[in-house]
Amino acid sequence: MKFAMNTTVPLRVGLIGVGKHARQILIPAAEQIPDAIRFVALATGHAESARKVESFYRLPCAVGHEAIIGNPDVEAVIISSHDHERHAIDALEAGKHVFIETPGITSREGARRIRRLSQERCLVYHVGSCLRYSPIYQKMKRLLAEWRERTPGPRTFSVRYYSYIGHFQNLLLYLAGDITHVLNLMHADRSSAVALYRFASGDIASITWGSFHNVAFPYESVEIIHSSGRLIAEDGRVLRFDRMPPECARSPLDMDFELADAQLFNPTFSIPYGRNMQQYLRGYVPQLEDFARCVRTGDTPLCGVGDAEKTLLVGEASGKSAEAGGTWVAVES
Image (cartoon, rainbow, N blue to C red):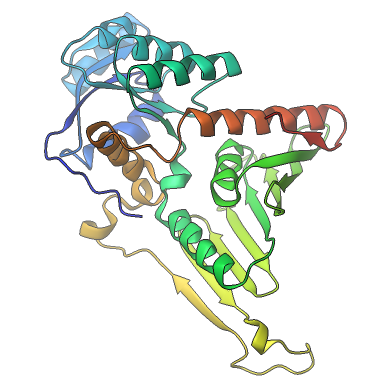
């Protein structure tokens, strides 16, 4: 999916929260798309950090989010603070479009208020689930749809990642639809776990996560299997599709070179195509670009309040399952 802007007028944005995530991820990502987003004001929680940020970025920086949402020059806000939900509701009530970092919501009541405000006031509420915008997972979703059409039937998903699995629960919802049940087995020291998921579609999935002392080494994969093949994304960079059509079915003792074909997809490593490669591949640049586009066009973002609420409910069911020692728990609807 290509997220092209339909306007050359940058969206005037206020940034609420200028902590490490904003400085290392959001601001550098936005700087790659100056035709889409332009920061006009910043806000932090403390006077000392506000002075430092204002001096470094040479933008007005207020203490507290109220100055941002009350600024008539601000069309939209990006929220990277610790109090996501409250700041989002305040911004919507002030008539500002919202891009909010995950989790986006923290309660069902908050989700209801955000949904009502955004609908009543025709405002975009965009949750920063960056993996939905990652080029690798976008390509995986397209290939999966074509694969399902060619060879229907349930798929098995297998995810491997660090302990921050909320993004991958959200990605599974995007790839396979609604999750109905969760079983979560966790070690007593909470160092690692295996969670199983059942989908309304008949698909099943697992997520294995580990909380390592050092997360410098790559530990990310999303694999989808079916009797007709395997589709796997490794470390958010490389996508491989091994196809095994039914007409090529053979006994394991009767194999030859041409029974299956494979495709390998790699990103293009060049400045015009790759931009800042990690920011682009992770989906940070495309999601901000699409936020600006959705504000200008009125389109619906790939992850909104409904998607965030589903992710929240899956996480709650997972927590209940772990507390019960690893039993199947239904996801609330």
